[in-house]
Length: 636
Image (cartoon, rainbow, N blue to C red; front, side, top):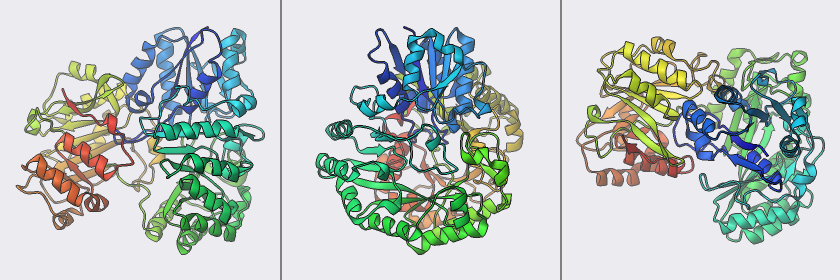
């Protein structure tokens, strides 16, 4: 029986330590499906390693398994990075590579590679069993097979310890596969024929396990929870297990299906938040996407959830066929006029492989990017500039920010460092090994040392650059670290540079693979297209803004003898944040954080020079967004 390693790589982030939601449930289901096979050796790349290692460190770790088979769960955000990892594994030795997941569809030419030996289309448990049992099964190169009966009767892989929920204190539960709806933009309903529902007894065992383990959040992955038969009975049993609401439950639902009884039962069970796809109020767009919507019943259903303390997260899509800028604005107005803007998510249309919109894109007049996330660039109703106007209108009407700058983390000081020039690299421990999250360039270090450290970088990472570091040297460093980590986002932080950094010249030295996923995903962060995976930050005691172009931000270095008050922070609103480095005691800063933390964090980007105080600040100001156990800064 061959040895197997299964991996799932995360959405790229621009802040180290943020929750990624990259939970390898699919890998755990595959492992569980073959647990009865004699001598089956299946390992799953731990979530922390997948989420927080740079490309070079990740490849080294995967190669170290020396497995016969490597499997990757592939989404749009990790397709190209998974292909890169497959190339590294193939060049390191004799192994076989399997790709599966939502991105793997027969019409997706981008996924085709000589490095991939087999493609699993749709659910993978049955196909995976055959690949391990029958060497001849590999000869087809790809296959689809229903795993409906296995899914219906299987218990959650959490219960057998195949997946660890503790890193984000979050558990995922599938109660159904398939979807009763046939929305043109979505692949989910194409991945299998018909619906299959997990047995209620196994779902309840999973919820009971979560309650026993004190898991804070459980996400039901169903595309529409309301599609499940006898849902109200199931909710009554969940309410009995979740007495006191110790577990917060999340899912997706069609609002039109929510009557008073269902809303009561959802609240009693402990549901806290629902993603609700409105997408558009434009009748023509709704018809073309095959999504009939009764807007009156939609509002009634959402209001029923709200009155019971359940947050509705309303989805809207920009660029749908049949829609235009005015139509999108009317959809935004509909949300605002009915008081539904508690948590709105707005996405540009992605013309995904395998979907009806991809198949009919010419007929529908959709022009889209050919690389992930396949964002639509124009349509018959939307010119390219209309997308920016749509976001501007939505931000103004809904009082929201849909493309915020990354959180500010400019910490560098540890107990071993007094001034910036004395500081060394900051490391974190992931999976029992130490990796470099902040590479210190307060002097021009030997390039051989940089080459060695390039293999130890996290995802993402920072280069902290002092005033004495020359541009030519910095270009050499950038070329080295990005060549070894071509899919890993980075931030270059300049501390009191003598002149404004020439970012375009520096970008010419960067060896990131283009287009990077973030180039498409964050294309509306700034008005002009271009780099979105390398962020430049300038830290200076000069209050005048001089560094605020695309992917550039300027931060005031606060080294006054006392800590700022809120009125002091207002003086720097034209900048992108403030780095607090006052010569006061840690106790004074702790008291400041406790006194002003929430109010200050809501209005200003704030960082602290001291790494341990910065860690505390992130966990205080962004308590639901960071993983405490990986923010463990160490010097050296």
